[in-house]
Image (tube, rainbow, N blue to C red; front, top):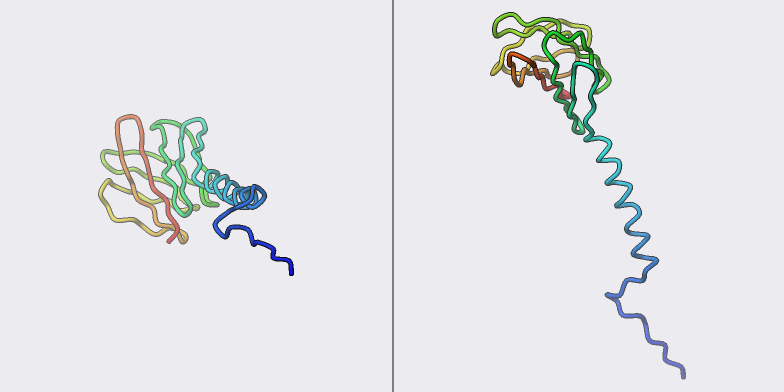
Length: 123
């Protein structure tokens, strides 16, 4: 009779380690791309899986494409910033509850002398 010893159950071979590491690395790369920051002339974006914050330079004629829609700072008068989001113009103030526009929630995050930042999220 021949007795064959089974490998130690807690032991992971190098091939198994590689097989486990590759999907984890791919998932990390996908998440990194999904949570990416982009910028263009006159704006910066920080995006997560279902929301983006777009910071526009005041006075810049800039438009950002986020979550499949376009967002643009139209004008600022006093404490009201007017944006065009998904083809609709909306006036927002800091502290105001999010406004629904084309299936998205839009909220003014900050308004300074030099920038206006909005958060756009999936409704």
